[in-house]
Amino acid sequence: AADVEASEPQESALRQQAELWAEAWRTLVEDLRMPSNATPSDCASRVRELRAEAVVLKGLLQQLRCQTSHDLPQRVTSLLQLCDERLASQRIVEALQKLLRVEGIAEVLPALKDVLDIGALRRRAAASAAVTAAAAHTSEGLRSDKTLGPAVAAEAGA
Image (tube, rainbow, N blue to C red; front, top):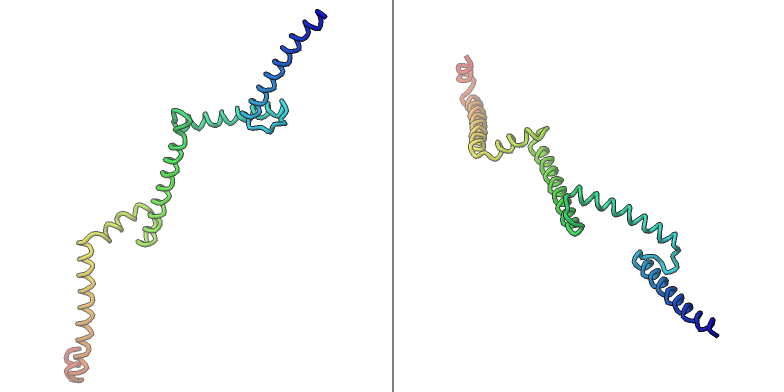
C-alpha cells in the first residue's frame, strides 16, 4: 500500500511534466508557424532557415545603414524612389537627345540653351526673315525683267 501511495505522487509529477512538455512543444510549433503534426527535425530545419534569413536581414540592415529592422521599409522606399527618379531623368535626357538631334548628354545642355535663349531665337527669326526677304526680292527682280521686255533685260544682263 505504501508503494502505491508513493507512486501516485510520482505519476502525478510525471503527468505534469509531460503536460508542460506538450504545451512547450505546441508553443514552439506555433511560433515557428509549422503544422501541428511537425516533427522535431521539421522544427530544426525551420530554425536553420530562420537563422539564414536573419543573417540576410542583418546584412541588409548594415548595407542600408538601418538602426533597426523597423527602419528597413522606409530605407527601401527611399531607395526605390531614388531609382525611379534616376530612371525618369535618364528618359528625359534620351527624349531631349532625340528632340534636339544631339548624340551625347554633353551636347544637350548647349542645344537646349540655344533653343531657350531669347536672343538666339530673335537672331534666328531675323536671319529667317532676311532669307525670306532676299528670296522675295530676287524673285521680284526676275519678274520685273520679264515685264520690261527683252531690250531692257539684255541691258541689265550686260
